[in-house]
Image (cartoon, rainbow, N blue to C red; front, side, top):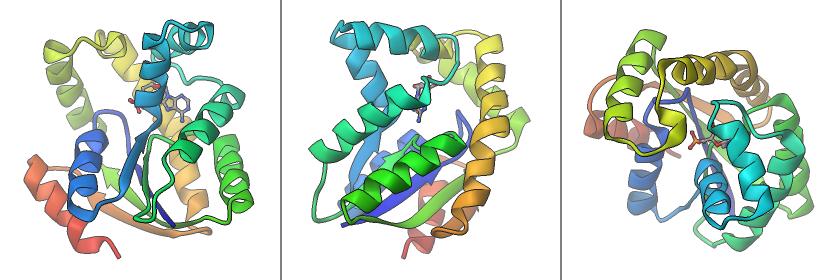
Length: 188
Ligand code: AMP
């Protein structure tokens, strides 16, 4: 089973693109953000703990994410492969991902890295906030914090992953269709 990662800053459109790729290529889309929100919806203590981080734009701690990710990975293994959206986001999560995939004899085929400049991300964040009921979408400080965490913690993971898998970097500027065509053209 192949694993493809999709990554990029918050508001770059990776969730939307992941759904399109899932439809086109048949990969199973796993979003750790969706998993966090589902856990919160269930009303569990764990879900409320996770929401206390995500609703402030902070990352959920790595050890909690490791368990959650292992659970969703094992629930979603398919022949067609997995498109993993939103994990890993820290250097320790890269280690956890490699540990969990190696233990299951899975390997990371490629990383789709969507690039969008900060000014454009902030415009999109504002637009999304207007039509969204996500608590972590609401205010500009949360938008800035999420982008800052991406720059400080997630971007270095992408550089590190270059040693493990083929990283396909492409521009996320343009409309949804233009970006999805770019992705489809470079997927192996
Ligand atoms: P997303 O929908 O991918 O933007 O994720 C929404 C929120 O869920 C993030 O802002 C984090 O608080 C939390 N989250 C999702 N994935 C991770 C992760 N890999 N590590 C830590 N927190 C995460």
